Length: 363
Ligand SMILES: NC(=O)c1ccc[n+]([C@@H]2O[C@H](COP(=O)([O-])OP(=O)(O)OC[C@H]3O[C@@H](n4cnc5c(N)ncnc54)[C@H](O)[C@@H]3O)[C@@H](O)[C@H]2O)c1
Ligand SMILES: CC(C)C[C@H](N)C(=O)O
Image 1 (cartoon, rainbow, N blue to C red):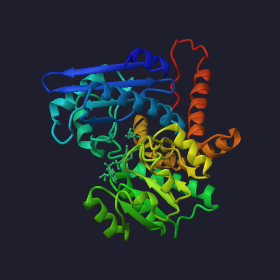
Image 2 (cartoon, helix red, strand yellow):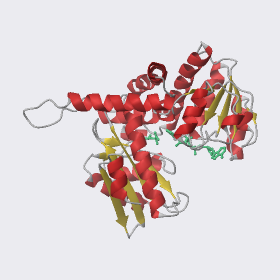
Image 3 (cartoon, protein in one colour):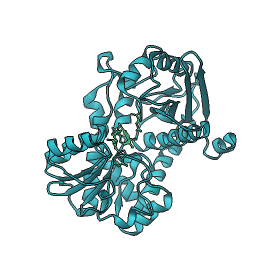
């Protein structure tokens, strides 16, 4: 892979390699775009088989955060970090502190948070070395675990998508099939259950399935069965790339609305479900609740304010479909257009000369 060519193609700003022999740290920080503000995105810890795999992942994820943050209306740029290692074996205080020192060295150009493989406890260790970390324990005045807030945002976005598909956002009596009932989806199921939706769930983790069955009366099905069940809404909350050639022909739902990142295997799958008349709520628009919540910490965390902002995911989903209709395109493309238009217009409005030579940072 020619890294500079790739960075140039998608206009990346910076890629930082971090190595610390003492702790075994091997991490990469990607800063994709800081037009809107400091790059904010989580740290993924994953046992990548090759360095190239880690580089590709961090580049892809970092760029995704630029779009997610822009579409969410945040004055925040996009970035992400990956730590190469098995989260079940290779975590230590030294490792996260070493990583925190590298983040500190970027002096606020990159701010981290949780992602797959990292937890609030890990953020607390990073916090020992830097203030450029969010999703730290609430005892530090931070917002804590972002997952319940991500779930609330997905719930709000699902209601908006249901309104477009069915003419009402009332989810009582609707059948929702949920793939993966982990941190986010457990909380999503709670909201759906409280509203009177019927749940069908699956997970590779039996404990997680049982929890949803016991707490919310969900019906459990096998991991391959979930795609073809009779339902109104399909909610992918486990893995990426699950909207693909194999699953699309099985889908019975009119709405796809879930938390998972990178749900479309390829862009053409987004076009295909659009042509079939399905309402796909673009992943990075509907799952922005977590980042909206942690971003609020940059102003001194206020939960009420953060949740109010998360509510706007409902309108953001409506807006995406408005753009899709206006410009005759699939919803995933409309989401990209919404994000790109916002970045371009803010960049333009910031061209104004300021006497002190600094950029105004609008909060
Ligand atoms: N946590 C957040 O705030 C947040 C924010 C934005 C996006 N997301 C995305 O949402 C998704 C869920 O995040 P999470 O924090 O709940 O993760 P999680 O690990 O807690 O939950 C994922 C669940 O999916 C299950 N799973 C994995 N493979 C599966 C398969 N093949 N079939 C069925 N189930 C399977 C896992 O066992 C687990 O229970 C991820 O894609 C994540 O990137 C999370
Ligand atoms: C900043 C984090 C809470 C971001 C989250 N991991 C996401 O993918 O949106």
